[in-house]
Image (cartoon, rainbow, N blue to C red):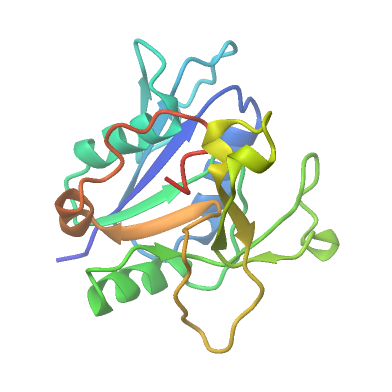
Length: 203
């Protein structure tokens, strides 16, 4: 039986980026069994995804935040293979889905973060990227030294430089994609209680 990959993709006011990301997945995915759960967390402009096979589009009744939406998507998944994505991404034809399945099988008690190229806003030109992202190291900031600093910035992630080898540990998963075993995610408590957009990874 094929191993099914569930792709969880919260979005908020992404407009044309959301279908562009889905199209890129369709064009590059190399496994036959997958489902995309796109979760709208209160976008002002709605996006019609009804013409896509393998896409379940859900609208939150109240704003849940990115991690509340991610948590909801994982809970709706019926497979042990989960990929969480930002909804403004592009993918290479490099058998990325098979690699994800293999990594989860190899080490089901690990949260994985794939390397990404930072493309910036308004461009998908991979030849003009801002560098590679490899997860993050953590800086513990003394908020008393900067009185006006928001309390949530006391744990400050800094992008990690490239490290030797294909796999390496990072202090903080930070990036645009995480993949893991649903059983392990549930065991460690997932993302319950986190609601922010863009600041939750350090916590």
